Image 1 (cartoon, rainbow, N blue to C red):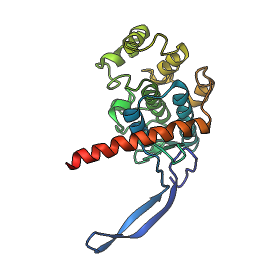
Image 2: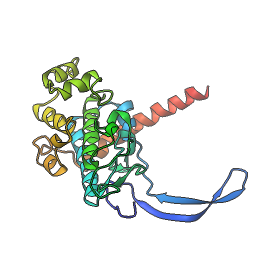
Image 3: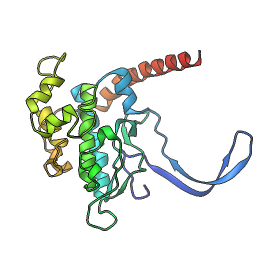
Image 4: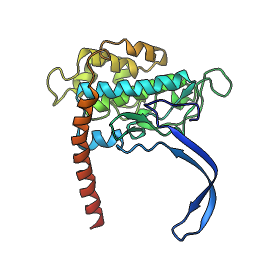
Length: 258
Protein backbone atom coordinates (compact mmCIF):
# COMPACT_ATOMS: atom_id res chain seq x y z
CA UNK A 1 0.00 0.00 0.00
CA UNK A 2 2.99 2.31 0.44
CA UNK A 3 3.44 2.07 -3.33
CA UNK A 4 -0.15 3.01 -4.15
CA UNK A 5 -1.77 6.44 -4.12
CA UNK A 6 -4.83 7.01 -6.29
CA UNK A 7 -8.19 8.73 -5.79
CA UNK A 8 -10.03 5.42 -6.29
CA UNK A 9 -7.96 3.46 -3.76
CA UNK A 10 -8.16 3.74 0.03
CA UNK A 11 -4.94 5.51 0.98
CA UNK A 12 -2.44 4.38 3.58
CA UNK A 13 -1.70 7.26 5.96
CA UNK A 14 1.00 5.70 8.12
CA UNK A 15 2.43 2.50 9.58
CA UNK A 16 3.16 2.38 13.31
CA UNK A 17 5.27 -0.52 14.49
CA UNK A 18 5.03 0.42 18.16
CA UNK A 19 1.51 1.78 18.58
CA UNK A 20 -0.22 1.70 21.96
CA UNK A 21 -3.65 0.09 22.23
CA UNK A 22 -5.86 0.90 25.20
CA UNK A 23 -8.43 -1.61 26.43
CA UNK A 24 -11.76 -0.64 27.98
CA UNK A 25 -10.30 -1.29 31.44
CA UNK A 26 -7.54 1.28 30.68
CA UNK A 27 -4.79 -1.36 30.42
CA UNK A 28 -2.54 -0.97 27.38
CA UNK A 29 -0.30 -3.04 25.18
CA UNK A 30 2.04 -2.40 22.28
CA UNK A 31 0.84 -3.40 18.83
CA UNK A 32 1.49 -2.99 15.12
CA UNK A 33 -0.97 -0.58 13.51
CA UNK A 34 -1.77 0.87 10.12
CA UNK A 35 -3.67 4.13 9.72
CA UNK A 36 -5.93 4.33 6.68
CA UNK A 37 -7.81 7.13 4.99
CA UNK A 38 -11.29 7.51 6.50
CA UNK A 39 -13.94 6.64 3.93
CA UNK A 40 -17.28 7.49 5.49
CA UNK A 41 -19.84 6.94 2.74
CA UNK A 42 -20.44 3.23 3.31
CA UNK A 43 -20.13 0.08 1.22
CA UNK A 44 -21.29 -0.12 -2.37
CA UNK A 45 -22.88 -3.44 -1.40
CA UNK A 46 -25.27 -1.79 1.07
CA UNK A 47 -26.41 0.80 -1.44
CA UNK A 48 -27.31 -1.87 -4.01
CA UNK A 49 -28.78 -4.34 -1.52
CA UNK A 50 -30.80 -1.85 0.52
CA UNK A 51 -31.65 1.04 -1.81
CA UNK A 52 -31.93 -0.79 -5.14
CA UNK A 53 -30.03 -1.37 -8.35
CA UNK A 54 -28.34 1.48 -10.20
CA UNK A 55 -29.34 3.00 -13.51
CA UNK A 56 -27.13 2.09 -16.47
CA UNK A 57 -25.56 5.55 -16.32
CA UNK A 58 -24.74 5.30 -12.60
CA UNK A 59 -23.41 1.74 -13.01
CA UNK A 60 -21.20 2.95 -15.83
CA UNK A 61 -19.91 5.84 -13.72
CA UNK A 62 -18.84 3.60 -10.87
CA UNK A 63 -17.47 0.97 -13.23
CA UNK A 64 -15.26 3.70 -14.72
CA UNK A 65 -13.98 4.56 -11.24
CA UNK A 66 -13.37 0.91 -10.35
CA UNK A 67 -11.46 0.39 -13.59
CA UNK A 68 -9.40 3.52 -12.98
CA UNK A 69 -8.33 2.20 -9.59
CA UNK A 70 -7.58 -1.29 -10.89
CA UNK A 71 -5.68 0.03 -13.91
CA UNK A 72 -3.46 2.07 -11.61
CA UNK A 73 -2.84 -0.95 -9.36
CA UNK A 74 -1.99 -3.15 -12.31
CA UNK A 75 0.37 -0.56 -13.75
CA UNK A 76 2.14 -0.48 -10.39
CA UNK A 77 2.54 -4.26 -10.58
CA UNK A 78 -0.14 -5.41 -8.13
CA UNK A 79 -3.31 -7.49 -8.37
CA UNK A 80 -6.10 -7.08 -5.80
CA UNK A 81 -7.60 -10.60 -5.92
CA UNK A 82 -10.65 -9.83 -3.76
CA UNK A 83 -12.70 -7.34 -5.73
CA UNK A 84 -16.30 -7.46 -4.46
CA UNK A 85 -18.98 -4.89 -3.53
CA UNK A 86 -18.09 -5.10 0.17
CA UNK A 87 -14.56 -3.96 -0.71
CA UNK A 88 -15.78 -0.98 -2.73
CA UNK A 89 -16.39 1.96 -0.42
CA UNK A 90 -17.83 5.38 -1.12
CA UNK A 91 -16.30 8.56 0.26
CA UNK A 92 -18.44 11.29 1.81
CA UNK A 93 -18.50 12.78 -1.70
CA UNK A 94 -19.64 9.39 -3.08
CA UNK A 95 -16.41 8.67 -4.93
CA UNK A 96 -15.59 4.97 -5.20
CA UNK A 97 -12.58 3.69 -3.26
CA UNK A 98 -11.20 0.16 -3.58
CA UNK A 99 -10.40 -1.20 -0.11
CA UNK A 100 -9.01 -4.27 1.69
CA UNK A 101 -5.67 -5.16 0.17
CA UNK A 102 -5.14 -8.24 2.36
CA UNK A 103 -5.11 -10.60 -0.63
CA UNK A 104 -3.16 -8.27 -2.93
CA UNK A 105 0.10 -9.48 -4.39
CA UNK A 106 2.69 -8.79 -7.06
CA UNK A 107 1.39 -9.58 -10.53
CA UNK A 108 4.72 -11.18 -11.45
CA UNK A 109 4.27 -13.78 -8.69
CA UNK A 110 6.84 -15.25 -6.34
CA UNK A 111 8.89 -16.79 -9.13
CA UNK A 112 8.57 -13.89 -11.58
CA UNK A 113 6.63 -15.88 -14.16
CA UNK A 114 3.35 -14.01 -13.70
CA UNK A 115 1.56 -17.18 -12.60
CA UNK A 116 -0.22 -17.02 -9.22
CA UNK A 117 -1.09 -20.19 -7.35
CA UNK A 118 -2.81 -19.29 -4.06
CA UNK A 119 -6.50 -20.17 -3.92
CA UNK A 120 -8.22 -17.20 -2.34
CA UNK A 121 -10.92 -14.62 -2.89
CA UNK A 122 -14.68 -14.64 -2.43
CA UNK A 123 -16.51 -17.48 -4.15
CA UNK A 124 -19.18 -15.52 -6.02
CA UNK A 125 -16.53 -13.28 -7.62
CA UNK A 126 -13.79 -15.87 -8.07
CA UNK A 127 -12.66 -16.59 -11.63
CA UNK A 128 -13.05 -20.25 -12.67
CA UNK A 129 -9.30 -20.82 -12.99
CA UNK A 130 -8.46 -19.85 -9.38
CA UNK A 131 -9.41 -23.24 -7.83
CA UNK A 132 -6.88 -24.85 -10.17
CA UNK A 133 -4.21 -22.68 -8.49
CA UNK A 134 -2.77 -21.39 -11.75
CA UNK A 135 -3.96 -17.97 -12.82
CA UNK A 136 -2.99 -14.44 -13.83
CA UNK A 137 -3.70 -11.59 -11.41
CA UNK A 138 -4.98 -8.99 -13.84
CA UNK A 139 -7.41 -11.41 -15.43
CA UNK A 140 -9.06 -12.51 -12.18
CA UNK A 141 -9.55 -8.87 -11.18
CA UNK A 142 -11.25 -8.23 -14.53
CA UNK A 143 -13.53 -11.22 -14.00
CA UNK A 144 -14.62 -9.98 -10.56
CA UNK A 145 -15.22 -6.49 -11.95
CA UNK A 146 -17.57 -8.00 -14.53
CA UNK A 147 -19.64 -9.69 -11.82
CA UNK A 148 -19.86 -6.40 -9.92
CA UNK A 149 -20.95 -4.53 -13.04
CA UNK A 150 -23.83 -6.96 -13.48
CA UNK A 151 -24.87 -6.63 -9.82
CA UNK A 152 -24.81 -2.83 -9.92
CA UNK A 153 -27.10 -2.70 -12.94
CA UNK A 154 -29.30 -5.78 -12.44
CA UNK A 155 -29.45 -5.74 -8.64
CA UNK A 156 -28.66 -9.45 -8.37
CA UNK A 157 -25.68 -11.72 -9.14
CA UNK A 158 -25.35 -13.23 -12.64
CA UNK A 159 -24.59 -16.66 -11.15
CA UNK A 160 -23.83 -18.21 -7.76
CA UNK A 161 -20.26 -19.19 -8.55
CA UNK A 162 -18.17 -19.62 -11.70
CA UNK A 163 -18.05 -23.41 -11.90
CA UNK A 164 -19.23 -25.82 -14.62
CA UNK A 165 -21.90 -27.09 -12.21
CA UNK A 166 -23.50 -23.68 -11.69
CA UNK A 167 -26.51 -23.59 -14.06
CA UNK A 168 -26.08 -19.95 -15.06
CA UNK A 169 -22.30 -20.01 -15.45
CA UNK A 170 -22.45 -23.30 -17.35
CA UNK A 171 -24.58 -21.52 -19.96
CA UNK A 172 -22.00 -18.73 -20.20
CA UNK A 173 -19.12 -21.20 -20.41
CA UNK A 174 -20.85 -22.94 -23.31
CA UNK A 175 -21.54 -19.51 -24.89
CA UNK A 176 -25.29 -20.07 -25.00
CA UNK A 177 -25.77 -16.37 -24.44
CA UNK A 178 -29.35 -16.12 -25.67
CA UNK A 179 -30.46 -18.59 -23.00
CA UNK A 180 -28.55 -16.72 -20.28
CA UNK A 181 -30.05 -13.33 -21.15
CA UNK A 182 -33.52 -14.75 -21.61
CA UNK A 183 -33.36 -16.19 -18.09
CA UNK A 184 -32.15 -12.89 -16.59
CA UNK A 185 -34.63 -10.81 -18.58
CA UNK A 186 -37.70 -12.32 -16.95
CA UNK A 187 -39.81 -9.70 -15.19
CA UNK A 188 -37.65 -6.94 -16.69
CA UNK A 189 -38.64 -4.41 -19.39
CA UNK A 190 -37.97 -5.43 -22.98
CA UNK A 191 -34.46 -4.32 -23.93
CA UNK A 192 -33.35 -3.83 -20.32
CA UNK A 193 -29.95 -5.31 -21.16
CA UNK A 194 -28.57 -3.47 -24.17
CA UNK A 195 -26.55 -5.36 -26.77
CA UNK A 196 -23.40 -3.43 -25.83
CA UNK A 197 -23.87 -4.23 -22.13
CA UNK A 198 -24.36 -7.92 -22.94
CA UNK A 199 -21.23 -7.99 -25.09
CA UNK A 200 -19.05 -6.32 -22.47
CA UNK A 201 -20.27 -8.53 -19.63
CA UNK A 202 -19.81 -11.73 -21.66
CA UNK A 203 -16.24 -10.75 -22.40
CA UNK A 204 -15.42 -9.79 -18.81
CA UNK A 205 -16.53 -13.14 -17.37
CA UNK A 206 -15.32 -15.39 -20.20
CA UNK A 207 -14.32 -18.87 -19.05
CA UNK A 208 -10.99 -18.67 -20.86
CA UNK A 209 -8.80 -15.93 -19.32
CA UNK A 210 -7.25 -15.23 -22.72
CA UNK A 211 -10.69 -14.17 -24.00
CA UNK A 212 -11.17 -11.51 -21.32
CA UNK A 213 -10.30 -7.97 -22.39
CA UNK A 214 -7.45 -5.99 -20.92
CA UNK A 215 -8.38 -2.74 -19.21
CA UNK A 216 -7.04 -0.80 -22.19
CA UNK A 217 -9.48 -2.72 -24.42
CA UNK A 218 -12.36 -2.15 -22.01
CA UNK A 219 -11.78 1.61 -22.23
CA UNK A 220 -12.55 1.48 -25.95
CA UNK A 221 -15.69 -0.65 -25.67
CA UNK A 222 -18.89 1.02 -26.98
CA UNK A 223 -20.78 0.58 -23.69
CA UNK A 224 -17.97 2.23 -21.71
CA UNK A 225 -17.90 5.22 -24.07
CA UNK A 226 -21.54 6.10 -23.44
CA UNK A 227 -22.57 8.88 -21.04
CA UNK A 228 -21.55 8.92 -17.37
CA UNK A 229 -22.97 10.95 -14.50
CA UNK A 230 -21.61 14.31 -13.46
CA UNK A 231 -20.41 14.52 -9.88
CA UNK A 232 -23.41 16.70 -9.13
CA UNK A 233 -25.81 14.03 -10.40
CA UNK A 234 -24.09 11.35 -8.32
CA UNK A 235 -24.10 13.53 -5.21
CA UNK A 236 -27.80 14.36 -5.58
CA UNK A 237 -28.89 10.74 -6.08
CA UNK A 238 -26.66 9.21 -3.42
CA UNK A 239 -27.46 11.82 -0.80
CA UNK A 240 -31.06 10.58 -1.06
CA UNK A 241 -29.95 6.95 -1.12
CA UNK A 242 -27.80 7.60 1.97
CA UNK A 243 -30.81 8.93 3.87
CA UNK A 244 -32.85 5.86 2.94
CA UNK A 245 -29.98 3.55 3.85
CA UNK A 246 -29.43 5.23 7.22
CA UNK A 247 -33.16 4.89 8.02
CA UNK A 248 -33.17 1.20 7.04
CA UNK A 249 -30.10 0.38 9.11
CA UNK A 250 -31.43 2.39 12.07
CA UNK A 251 -34.72 0.49 12.01
CA UNK A 252 -32.84 -2.79 11.80
CA UNK A 253 -30.71 -1.94 14.84
CA UNK A 254 -33.80 -1.00 16.82
CA UNK A 255 -35.42 -4.33 15.95
CA UNK A 256 -32.31 -6.22 17.06
CA UNK A 257 -32.25 -4.36 20.38
CA UNK A 258 -35.85 -5.26 21.22
